Amino acid sequence: MLRDNIRKIFSEAKERGWVMEPQAKDLLRLAGMDVSRFLFTADAAEAIRFADEIKYPVVAKVVSPDIIHKSDASGVVLGIPDDKKLGDVFTKMSRIKGFQGIIVEEELKGIEMIVGMKMDKQFGPVILLGMGGTAVEIYKDVTIRMAPLREHDTESMMMCLTARPLLEGYRGSDGVNVNELKKMLLAFSSLVMEFEKEVDSVDLNPVICNASRCVVADARIMLTKS
Image 1: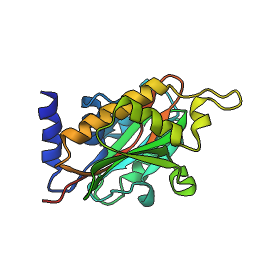
Image 2: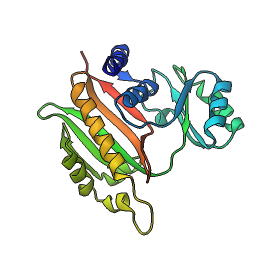
Image 3: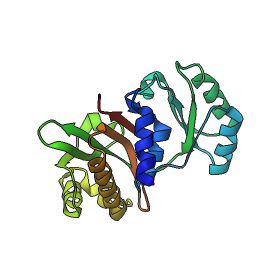
Image 4: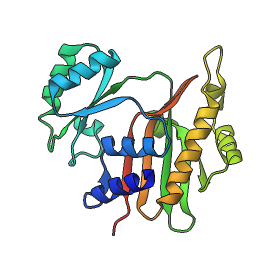
């Protein structure tokens, strides 16, 4: 049943060529991955009620079939502190091309990582792990393995990162929950292998890892062209 639901999400996104964030997060949750608590809505009052429920600060992101890279379109606002600011952000984002609504979600603290997948013509699906957020392009601290991953692969990927001490806890800072990160990577690998014919690439960036959780905060899934 879960796989049928995932396949339905892919089918509905096929014509567009990519899965929009609310559906992508639903899909990842069905696959057993932890995603940020969020609401997708086109109603400003409902967005504010949800933000009050999960407590400020929150994150708001535009949802539009015309916008793949939300940050480039001023479609992401972090650290929203109150109802008024969220209302203002909603009004501003409603003017973005193709606006269908916004995602309101919890703002998480932790180390920003990236988990990704790319379909390689020679090796098939390959999986990437690295330091995420804006650090992706600055530090280029990533490691890649062929799918499917085994547990020893997840361990070696973490060991290969230059920033590995940050994951373990550096100079008194909390490390990340390594078991949750391994669990996420293995669930992601299983998803990739099962749907490798449908998916061309996946970027989960950032994945926020801290001492208790490892959570997908943003997701972009590009589908194979037919």
